[in-house]
Amino acid sequence: MFDRAAAVAHPPFFSADITPAARPVAIDGNRELVGRGDHREAVFWIVATAARCRMILRDDGAWFPDLVADLVGLPDPAALLARRDRVLAALPR
Image (cartoon, rainbow, N blue to C red; front, side, top):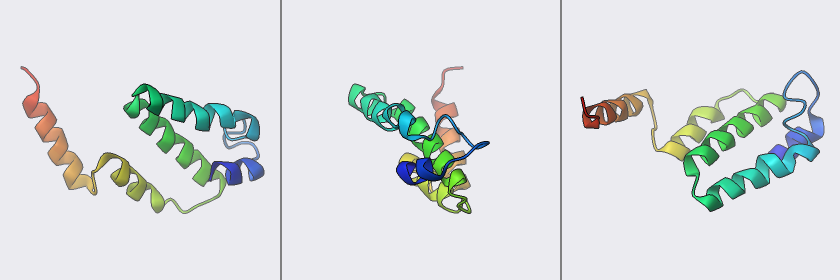
């Protein structure tokens, strides 16, 4: 997806971020984050980069909720709210 988007990217959308020259940072940098155990950071950048690529490719965005659900295991807003409640309940006052 990154390579397809980089091949057609034109300003104003992420003209510096999604380019062949930026691939080592965007793709290899994510691999490095995973390798170091920085999974949360990697997920953030994977989602951000995927969203940018899809925006460039003029996708309708229907894929985004599925991507997030797959990455974080929250299939719908109700699951997100339930997780929020569990996290808040576990926090000290």
